[in-house]
Image (tube, rainbow, N blue to C red):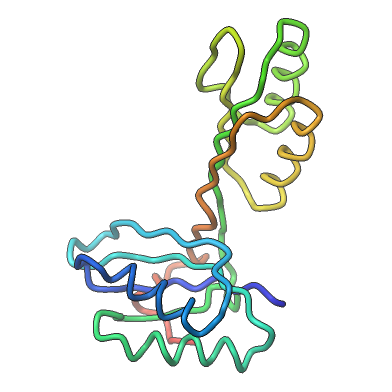
Length: 169
C-alpha cells in the first residue's frame, strides 16, 4: 500500500466532508487521516486527506470518483509536488515526580511544549512531520501514555502557486 496526500477544495456547505469520506470508504480505500478547515475564501473548505491505495491506477479511481461530486472544486495530489507537511499531536503522559525531569528533557529535545501540568500528568504538544510525531510517541512509550490525539497531515505546496491555481494531477 502506498500513501498519497490529496488537497481537495470543496464548496463550504454542510455534509460535503461526509460525502467525500463516504465515497472513499465505499470504494474500500483506506483513509489514513482526514481533516477539513476554512481557507482564505469563505465559500471554500479545504480537505486534506491521506489515502492508502495499492497503485496509481487506484489513486486515479479515487480522484475520478471525487471529481464527480458536485461540491468538489479541485483535487491536487500534493504527494507529487514539493510540499510542506505537518501534523499536530497532543500526548497526555503519566508524570511521576521522578519522571518529570526526563519528560522535560524529551520535550526540549523534540522542540515540543508542555501545555498542561497536573499532579499526575503532563500534556505535550508537538507539531512536525509524521516521522517526528512517531519518534516522540516511541520515546514516550517508555512512560505511561494516557491519551494521544493526532490531527493527521495538512500540507501546502512550496513556492508561489496555491492549490487553487495548480493543475489537477
